[in-house]
Length: 213
Image 1 (cartoon, rainbow, N blue to C red):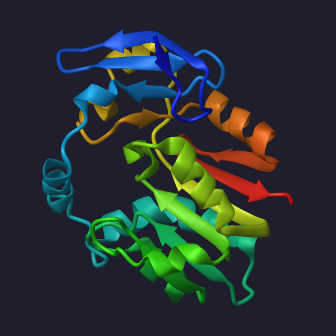
Image 2 (tube, rainbow, N blue to C red):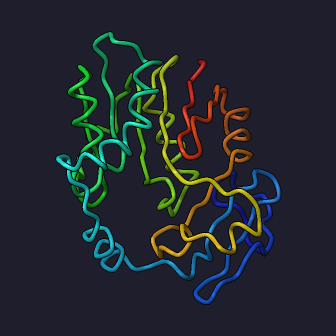
């Protein structure tokens, strides 16, 4: 029996199995995670990330990220504010877009922008796009994200959401070997209620959470 790495200690049962690995689902928060024994070693994981073509000059990539940037900016407002892009990747783009909107941005990435000092302060908003699904220790990383958001501030996340068991079995998103953590609306609602957050689902893969205290 596995235990949930997100809500800590609750039991997780068998959920799905493909040719490469097994997946488990928490019976309490509905978080789904890949078998920890199937994780890539750090050097192989970084090799996969090095193949990502995150180019700030790519208009298609900017349109993709704007699905988070635009609704987040509407909620944060146009006051000069400070933000952090957590998991900025090899070609930081969202931070550049938000800088162009007038925000003061910092970036952090464990492989490409490893500057731990930026994790020691609070921000008006924190973004995490296409990164939360890579978290090996999601309870720790979720706590870190929340700790960096000021009271009344926003956490903006972009990740594909689990729909149901049948859809998961056919889901391309789980086939990336670096994707190990999978969230659903149910999971985010659980976290919002537990941690004093207001949650909004914008489209199919954008989640905005406001820290109410």
